[in-house]
Image (cartoon, rainbow, N blue to C red; front, side):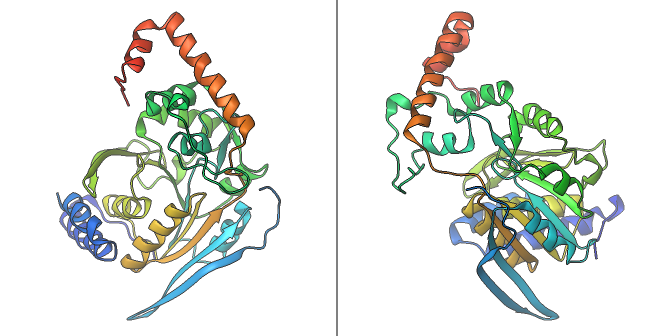
Length: 325
């Protein structure tokens, strides 16, 4: 059952947070152990059949811990799974980019980001070499500008109906930085998504804090049901959020388009003794075509010309790699 701790139980909550997060970190790699404990203590189609990629069960004192991952191209699969579990003790967690929403243009999209980082694949499965001349000077500044300018569309036509129809508590968990919150909330609302009534905190409460893991510190934020973790480990950060808000669940259903996020979540929840049902969402194609590279290069040059002509000071900062994000 869902447990909520009142303010006058703050000491209990802190102790539970401390023990929970350290238990999680002992289940992770040694390189993450010190950083995590230090921080915690201070394709298209509508086929609904999913293929199980892995399934493990760990013996626990009072039963079995489920840790299973499916490949799916339909959000309906995860929603249906949640319906088979106890509604009050099951948390449903969704990523945003290429899971609920997707970009309408390649420039500034999730796979454009991967291309900029040199880890995008061609349609033939080969890694695409990104030339230095094709990279923007300030990647996260550019993303911020594109998020403000561009719009997103649903990954599938019935996305909003499916997500809004769930009865479980819901967390939207994105790798985006909180610096992009205004644009992110705008696009969620424009696509008929509002999670304020499913928030783990009261409507007038938001969380903004620094979190250190593996030698890196990021500013993360949770407001109106949307948790922005700035590229940090989603499994570790979800457990930290639950500890801070005084919530416990016996099961988590998690949907994300990135395999490493699925893996991190499964690892963290297994160490914490929480049942995990992961859905690797594959509906949005991740390969990059030559045509998209040409479009991205043209967009980069056009943006640079716009800044130089009308926002000379900002253009100079970016040209000098004086990045603000």
